[in-house]
Image 1 (cartoon, chains in turn orange, cyan):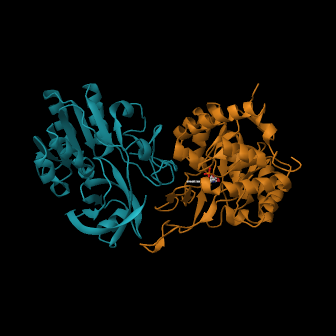
Image 2 (cartoon, rainbow over the protein chains, first blue to last red; image 1 turned 90 degrees about the horizontal axis):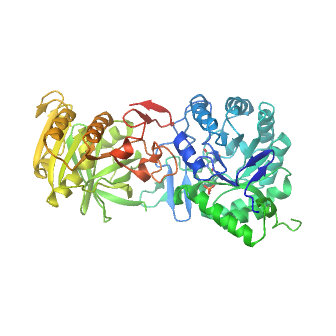
Image 3 (cartoon, rainbow over the protein chains, first blue to last red; image 1 turned 90 degrees about the vertical axis):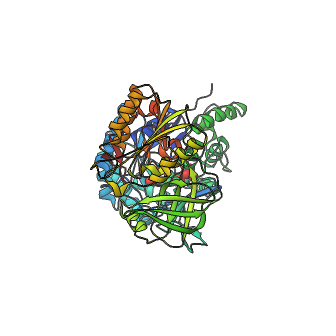
Length: 303
Length: 257
Ligand SMILES: Cc1cc2nc3c(=O)[nH]c(=O)nc-3n(C[C@H](O)[C@H](O)[C@H](O)COP(=O)(O)O)c2cc1C
């Protein structure tokens, strides 16, 4: 009997596919739709203490194989957003609340507010295009240790640390998160990128710098997950460029116990979750895997 | 695919509205929109108001960016993405078009195209006052019946489009209705249409950022304007609690219409 459910530390999810933070997850309606279309959990847009409008347009560069975005962490603030996660939670939808802040105290403040209605907390330590936030603080191991430790001492639900690939060695940050008490690490957030229009002779994004996602970054994500799997004992969650069941299997073989999908959901529609799950089951049957867990890390020499 | 094009002309429609014309070879259907980037100001969704080789978009100065654009702070080139969105298809032979304010820019191509197909078009254009009326000539030429209303009576009939529409709908047998304008107006039109069992199509506006269905800014019930709209049917609209009541701000916060 093939079972699709997976365990991420103490959590059980009905399947290994989650909606990645920042994609179609600022509203109750969209997250509900994505849950109903088969996702094992939905991760909210990253939420801060107060409302933030984000950057002016243009905020995306959409090319074959990749997307660059600089949304600028728009969000209505935790006090407003809490109504949305409360409604989702009341309907038994597994919501993981992603939060961003400048320091451990603020992260903890947000985590405490979200705790009651969240399945877990994902710390955005990795947005590559926001001043004083995300990757700017998440690239420093001491910061990451302090933030995770502070949040862990404030809430009882699982805390995941989402890491940036824009750093020489992702495992250094992964280890800091583990030592701080993180229940899982998530890799990767977007890859810092820029596009210039040669006729306008200016960067296209209003923020100039953005984060690259989509198919093209999958190898970067695979490498990060592979490295983390060898460096930490806590579960690794893979994200970056997943479009098919093959991509999911590849991330699992690299060491991911579950995955998140972002850009591809917008590209191919919410039915992608069901399509991948169906094909994943066929693949597992053909390869005699009874549970996704059996694929995790098999690409390692001492798998 | 984003592409850069040269601005050929800028026409002033009135003191706070301009039409920008440029070359673009892609085929555009009535009611579709472009994402137009006016560097270095902003990129905004704009309905296509002129079709053919020399396309056009019409901008009303409402917010900070649109005001700058209307004041002429535009360069020689713009960048286009799209055309995006679904479009107006004629339903039946006798069609009522209702536009409020700059909303006429979103349905003028549909009026012209339906008229050229030989359909019977009744058009109602409304605005607060005379100098806010635009595209009157174009709409008049392509309509079998043409009615103008102003809230203050400075031109045409004094009053609201909705009242005129309600009367006409009761008198004549329209096969379908298309509308674009303030959402409160469209909500009333849709309610009347549903009650009278007439197909209705409304073009809806929300803050749009990515235009490719990824960012959730233009969420509208279980839909997104960029992927599922901008045109929605009465059947869809009756199940969207936000319609005519709520929109989202730049932070995603709910704002009363
Ligand atoms: C438009 C957009 C917005 C995003 N916003 C966030 C965010 O608010 N917080 C976050 O942790 N990651 C954010 N991300 C990163 C994604 O969660 C994900 O890590 C990344 O896009 C790689 O996965 P993908 O290739 O499947 O999209 C965003 C990505 C995109 C494309």
